[in-house]
Length: 351
Image (cartoon, rainbow, N blue to C red):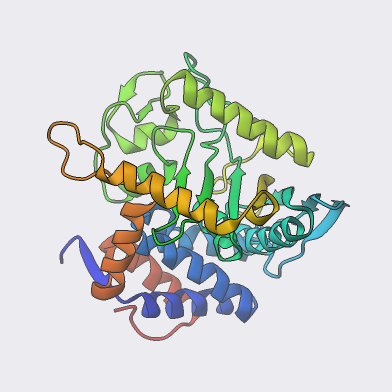
């Protein structure tokens, strides 16, 4: 067998949706989660795609994730809110809450809302991009179980704490920045461990605080913050904007979602939107963004650089390619999904 096989996006969505429904997730919510996971794979963010399904299904079966979404506003004011997600599926709760943030921004010009008692919500950029169709800037961030140490330390105190911002353009693609506070998303190390592949130096340290290229040792140690003290500072800021503003658990107290699949996730998020029209003419704003992108793309390139990319452009190019040719899925992921299919009673091969 080859290391990967190409699978059409529709087939992946259907198969994953069926797995979730057979596990007790309502059809509509199952399709939301399946769609978000496949979108991650389409954009080349394989660490947050369908490879995560076995973990989610395991937590759904053991009660660590609520099968039917329940989201309640604990604080609800014109431009802000605090939500309790009651351990719902993180992706489904996040989509629901981001839609409320967009509605609040339409009314107030800007919004900022937080959520507590949620679960892993996957690719942050998906939710930030929800604002684009409303001529808004969208943003989000999340904490997670402690994975990265403060700069100079070796004990993990913060999650990889990703954040994303999506900015609409006119004739150009939107600017979408989506990144973890760590050098790399921990999901990439998990995927490398599943494939028995090494990781680059500088990604992580082992439990003794030593640089390692062994993915399994890295999972027992800590992922490093990007940019040294800069990533460490950003992780602290996101911790403040999520757990502390939401009245939730800090990363250091959040359990590993694999260590106890029956335990609550206790993850917290923030979401927000900025209505461009509240600040000035939308067309002028978009024209200015287009001009900025043009300057970036057409400016002089450094030696050896063939093209300068705008944030989100590489993912958009990957999405187009994979829509046409199919999504490359690792053999180990295919096998894991088909085992889940046998367990759930979903007939037929994923291929």
